[in-house]
Image (tube, rainbow, N blue to C red; front, side, top):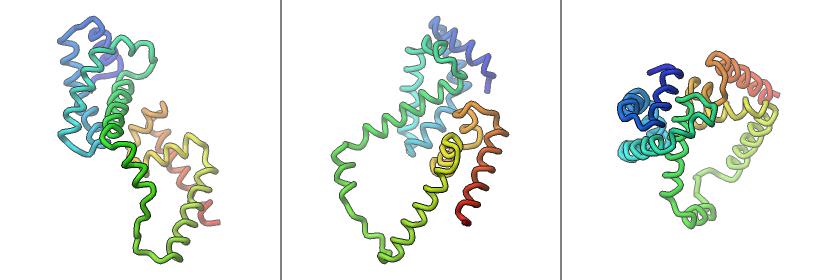
Length: 180
């Protein structure tokens, strides 16, 4: 993958409607953006369609890149992520979500087990509140959303090793809190 400086230069040339630069940008970044779409949409065909729509947006909105001050790859990933999430939201009508929220699922557990489980969830939530909000967000993103260390480092604008340290220390604090 090209450096941030190279990607920024390519996006600058796309602003000028340079098709060769656009093709180079696509070749250098499409695999990463496809993986973002695939992780969110969970369907290869939908991810491929989304990827094409994302690059149409990049072509149309390349001039907005300079105003963001973001890293070029970060800017592209945000476009891809937001587009994939918009597609997910468009798939499911709001009425279905409301209907599902009133459904009571039969979990097969007895009421006592449910009560214990809810208590554990409350303990974890309480311990998460003791963490700094950025670190708690990083922990959730890593262990609930499944984001990689690299993706988290880009999202929070910190070096990769800093992100690893954040997560390791946060997990240690959570363990201490849960052991109390």
